[in-house]
Amino acid sequence: MIEIDLYSDTQTRPTKAMRKAMADAEVGDEQQGGDPSVNKLRERVADLLGKEDAVFLPSGTMCNQIALLVQVRPGEEVICDQTAHIVTSEGGGGAALAGAMFRPLQGPRGMYSAEQVEAAIRPDNRYCPKQVLLEVEQTSNQGGGAVWPTKRIAEVAAAARKHGLKTHMDGARLMNAVVASGVPVKEHVRDMDTVWLDLTKGLGCPVGAVLAGPKDVIKEAWRWKQRLGGSMRQAGIIAAAGIHALDHHIDRLAEDHANAKTLAKGLAEIPGIAVEPVETNIVFFDIGATGWKGHDFNAALQKQGVRVSVGNERRIRALTHLDIPAAAIPKALDVIRRVAIRAN
Image (cartoon, rainbow, N blue to C red; front, side, top):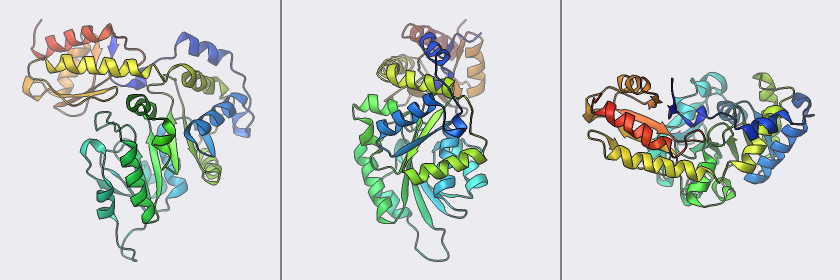
């Protein structure tokens, strides 16, 4: 049985208070625009992010894919980091659904620069794909939960706009960035045309994400939501979880960040383990020097009640979240230490 699940912050379960809010939610037909709880969540997120309108969707991946479908025509190109979730982890949806091409950049910890954007701009001629969108992931997952500084976001967005590109933010862990940086969320997304906020990771909801942007974009996003089967009926039950999370689960992200730093510090003291820098709730560490291979290492941990995520044979990921209290960190470290040094 897995007692300490560090696989991802997607492993959170609704708290009792969240479940009560869900049970008490006022509901209606979301597909027809008649669910008051969904509408409240949409308005809340649009106001939070400083955007004109928003649409509630089942997942962050659908948010990314609909953002592409609305803003990118087949054969057009998106500039993003090579580690972006929209490239690595969405089943090739950008190509399969929108017919999008990607121009991946290699930024340190998943964060490229305005100079790299300028260098990636293609000549405006018939031989090259038309470049129409720049994408930023906040925080950078494969970059170890690194937080894009708002100054850099503004710089890459300015470079994009100089060449007529729109901008989109994958906000899977946007509120982690807000809490870690102390910078208001509107500053993080000010230069983004579209942005989505995930409710299922650090915020602890069982399902859902909200895509926000200009009214005309969101109007077309509703059409794609319908086409892709994302429209729902009495979805207020799950929207209520999002409202509860926005009320109660943002400031507490600081606890996850503190636990991640404690975990990283302990990991660094284990022979054979090298730990990458930690800014938020994601901890990457290298086990190559222990002699273990990634999946074998994780399997050994699971036998003792701890689960992590395997990037490759050497790179392991652990995420702290709502269901990982501070008291669980020393226990996890003890298991990892014993497995790493092959102790009984």
